[in-house]
Length: 230
Image 1 (cartoon, rainbow, N blue to C red):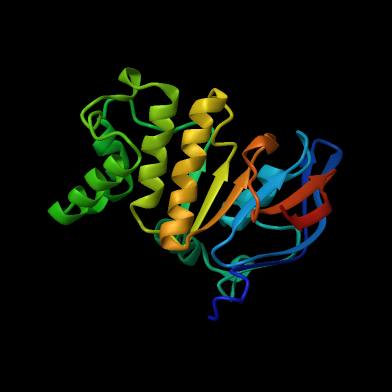
Image 2 (cartoon, rainbow, N blue to C red):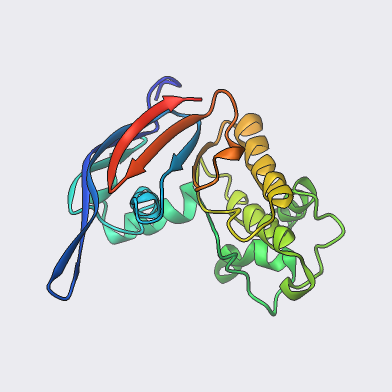
């Protein structure tokens, strides 16, 4: 694929949920491209469809209508096995809840996705280097309850990056952090984007983290109301 080819193409995507006798339209015909190697913000008020869109991009959910292509492959046409491989090998997920295991050290939490198949020495060294890169060189043996919220989020970032994904999907990764710590977390993601060309799609309600050159998509009531470069 050419570097100028969008990594993600979203075409007329709708997502409806049925709650009892009520149909909730989370997304209503969203069409957009996400450029390869871009830092893409998805903004909007609560209930605008931001997280729903992110889950669809990560093959964690299925659209009710429309199509989503990632690197030329339509996600909704993938088999369950193909989706599992896509999530495991190509996408790094970072959620507002850190999803760390309390009985494991920071290092082992980074390695969690690989524990079922065994961790080779080389992979452990990579995990240690990632923790160094996100500023946790002295916290590798600490367990989650011994880490601050910002430190826990950095562990989650290192875990997402260990697979060297082409795409990182971050859902309100600074939502539980103070602004200064949140800025450090965003900085880790920017370094990944700059140094490795990783495409980052970040859902947030905080516009203060946006910088010149970032891509910005705004949602309201499940529809795109604006898409531009900052």
